[in-house]
Image (cartoon, rainbow, N blue to C red; front, side):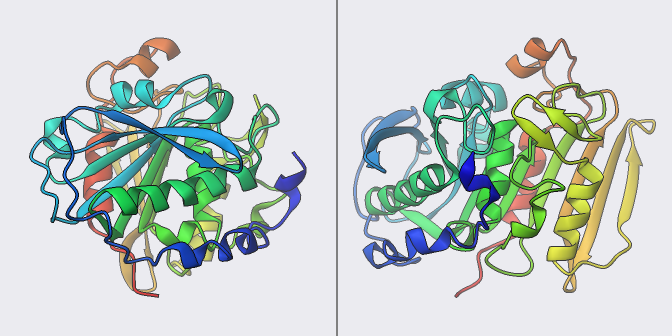
Length: 317
């Protein structure tokens, strides 16, 4: 797509004019009551002249005056937010009790960045911006604790958000899984311009992934980087120490890498499971594992993400 070759920083100007619509600390959604809390409900908003939708799951004990951490979860290709919700279990009671979960829906069942994407990078970044506006105006959101995770092309788009200085600046941390990083590969990774240093980022990937290969190469929607290269670029952007810590777990099947960046431990982290295919890491069988012909993994991405996200808040501008 033509926009992929542009610097993501250049796209920031698109959203600058919209910044006056709200401030990063907008709490106008606080004080508003909602029905049927604990059940995912759906909203439609207009973005770039198109109707876009997302699901939102409030805690069953939602308090209208309590500011909640909020996690946006981006589904994989040929999918919708509902399937990502069911696959990850991120709104189960053990996670959702003190958080809001948001499940956006991509146009044509995908997100920007691939050669088959229906939306441009600019359009999908605008959708995220417009969604944040809508969330803050209708729900009690803690703007210092907004996070993004996603699977496959959803994980790739989470990386695209992280690389955009304006939209990515609204988030405290990112956690892509099995990400197809079409906008952050050998040819264009220098275009990534995050909002701040460091940007906390955690990635999960299977060593046996044949759809988004650990060693990179031609993917379904374009060229993908080798995951070690992608991690190295983020370590460089975050001014991390060159040497990382590595733990080899579960009889050497799971490898956990962690970097210290600007004196902060664990700002960049990575979990590689050698025998995992293209799916969401889970100790209990889920839909993505069934689709990939895989088995449960030793680790739970949903659980690890909670601890990672809650360790970071967005600094004041």
